[in-house]
Amino acid sequence: MVNSEDIPLYMISVVANMLDIHPQTLRLYEREGLVQPKRTKGNTRLYSENDIERIKQIMTLTRDMGVNLAGAEIILNLKAQMEELKLTFYEVISFIEREMNNEFAGFEDKFKKAIVRAPHQQIVKSVLTKDEK
Image (cartoon, rainbow, N blue to C red; front, side, top):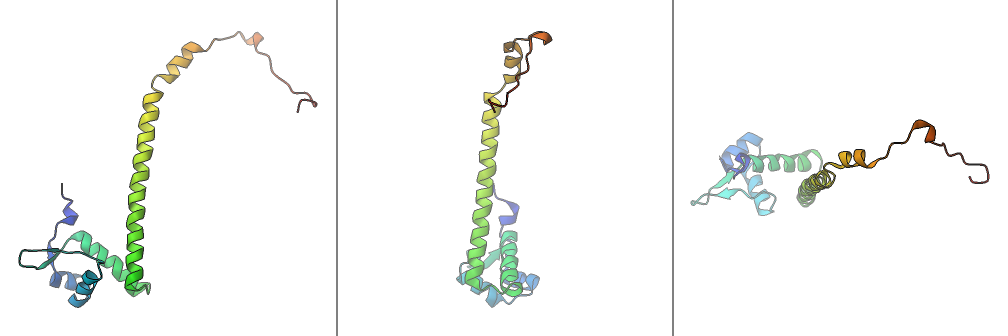
């Protein structure tokens, strides 16, 4: 199933106007491998919502934070790797929770039956002497 934000919708001129950026800058981002717009059969670039979001991030890094394009690429790649690791982490946690729930299903009932109750007067409190500490 295709995510609606991945559907290529916008031509380069529309994206340039939306983001107040020159089309040549968008072409540069593509040449540098920072963004990969889809192409029509006529070789027209079409940008998706995700492409536009990525371009906004590139613009923030380069314009506002003074990062060069190589640095922006590294930062965006690291960010993507962190997102993948986060998803993997949540998958592992979910797996562990499911396994624990399966393993310990009915665990409380088993212990209720297994514990032998003693009358109150038979419980003895253990006290350590100074030598035993």
